[in-house]
Image (tube, rainbow, N blue to C red; front, top):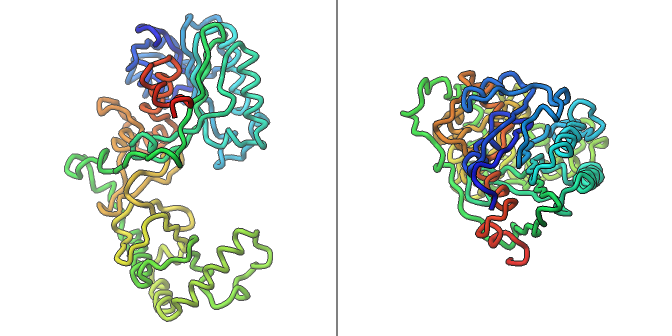
Length: 407
């Protein structure tokens, strides 16, 4: 295990998820960098460290020597939500090479990097191969395959699969192969109740309440779920596909295969429940949010006959509603898709977002909710970073639990 008092740097630091993890293990931050002005303020407010801006303009020799390099290098170039340009994205995709530039100058014993799950598959694996070869050429051992891990694997209520890249300088040691098979391992139970505040603890609670138009839309879909006793089509429901025949769906012949499949299943679903759905559609005509394009329902939860929308968590999306069981939250994201606690008729609040990402309650949150949601959506989960740091540093118990040869 690495000695206490080790020094680390925090590249693309955001609000300090890596910082939280490393300091809890006895580390001291000697350099932090992020181009986002609001993140710089939040970092300074919490850690008393001035954050340097554009890393591409930082001369490596100006950074104090350190033992561990941490970097959640920008993910938009590789994510499904972005354009997936990878290294062709000249503003973000190439920032990985600035990480390597600094590592080659200082030669720290360890590097711990994080990125989106899609990094592992991007460009048919070519992107990962470039990253792997580059890290090896810089003098570091790194696992041949990227490790994908999520907080809910260790009982934390968020499904956030991310790639973690553990690197150790070749003269320091090797990394035993990390093993965690979701199919073979019994995952600990998660509950959103573990991180929720009581409504009485939330200042200005009313601003987080959903409005009557949103309630009307949820009630509309709830009527459908109850009316068909949760007998659903096995795919998202599209209001515009609830018709007697695919011939009545404009442009059907030009749909991609997956959309044709959804449309065909929706038509069959409509025919099965025609009498009820016809009456439901007449009620839907009076619901404003449904008429304004919110005609899409993704039901990603139980199918019990007595099920209700109001028992779950959900997100309002551009096209409609996504409903999930109240075990763990979908991944926090930087864009505005804040989860709704249907049972409480409100959005999750920034402090709950902090808890979802394993930040302590002492963490000072940006007072602008929009900025705070974005910052936590861009952050790493502190406890997951701690797990990989301990594994990388050689913690005996962590390696015994996750090394392939012990599974």
